[in-house]
Length: 355
Image 1 (cartoon, one colour):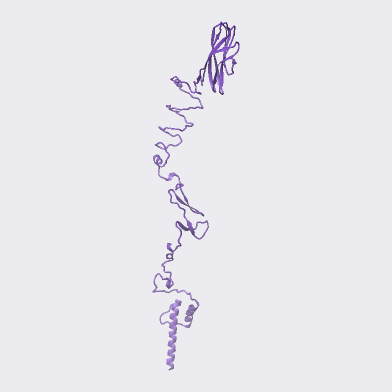
Image 2: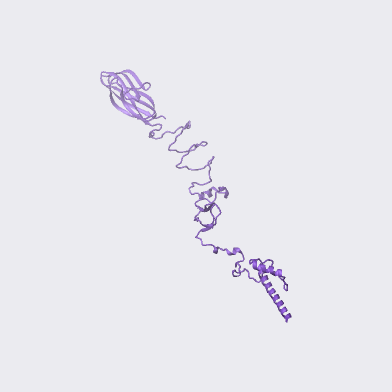
C-alpha cells in the first residue's frame, strides 16, 4: 500500500512539473525538449521570468500558424507596413485650392495654406521663403535673354509686334542703310540730307544754322509768275506813292511814310517838285529817314542847287539802306527853297528785303 502511495505522489509531481513546463514555455519563450527533466533552479528561473517580467521578449523562437497581416484583434496593425496606415483619405478635409505646408521661415508644424488663383494666360506661381506662394500676372515666364530662343527673323518679330510699320529687315541705329523709306510727320535731327548723292526733295520750312551754298550756276530759282514774296521772305517789297502835296519853302515835308518790319531793307525814292506860277525854285533836297519831317544825314539824302522858273518842275532820286531790329516807319522827306509863289510835290517810295 505504501508503494502505491509513493508511486502516486511521484506521478503527481511529474504531472505538475510537466504542466508548469508547458505554461512557462508558452509564456516565457523557453526552449525545452520532450522528456526533459527540469531541475529546481531551472523551474524557479522560468517561473521568475513569468512572474517578474510580464513584457519579456520571445527570442530565438518561431511562432507559426498566424495569419498575415496580423489583425488588430490579435494585437497586430492590420497592415503589411506602417505606410499603409496613412492614405489621402486619412487626412483631414481641407478647403478647395488649399495645401498643407510650413511657409514660415522657421521649423513648425504644417498648416493649411490657401493657394492664390493663378490660372490666367501668362501667369506663374512664385514661392517666397517665409511668405508663401504668390501669383505673377502679365509677365514673361523667364528672366533670361532672348538668346535662349532659336534664331528669330525680322518677319517673325513683326508677327508678334503690334505697332510696326513697313516691311523688310530689322534696322539698328549705328550706320544703318534704309532704302525707299518714307518719313511722314516726323523730324530729322543732325542728319545730312544728300551728303553723298544729291536728290530731289521738298520742304515747307527750311532753316539752316550754317552756310547755305547753292549751285554757282543754278543758284536759287526765282518766281516764274506775277506773284509777290511772302512777308518776311527775301524779295518782300513795298511800293507806296503819293499825290500832290503842298510844301512850304525851306521846310522839310513828309511826302510818303511806310512801316517796315525788322530786317534788312533797301529803299529808293523819287521826289517830283512843281513850281507854281510866279514861283522860282533854287535848292531842292530829298531824303529817306526814320524821323518824321526831318532830313536825314548824308548819305541818305540827295541835294540839287539850280534855278527852276515859274511853272517848272524838278525830279530827283534818293537811296537808303536800313537794318532794323524792330518794326519801324521810314519817311520820304522833301525840301525846297523858292520865292514869288507856291510849290507842290509828288513822290514814290520803293523798299525791298534783299536778305
